[in-house]
Image: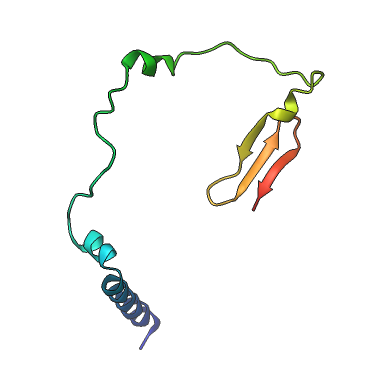
Length: 97
């Protein structure tokens, strides 16, 4: 048996085992049913409030002399890289990798 046939057969067997062990997965994978959503389609959002979210506000300046930069942080990194924040003063603030 070559490697391609082994990989194909083992993946098909794994899929079959998962489908029989987890009936919820097998229904969602193999049946074309629409999922039940708990969130209503019409959320009754006020259009004026929604438009106010896109309005440009005034610029705010934070000063190092007033020690305001220690409370500002921004997440950096990409997907699946953990949590890394950089502080307003340029130092790494919080990391969980």
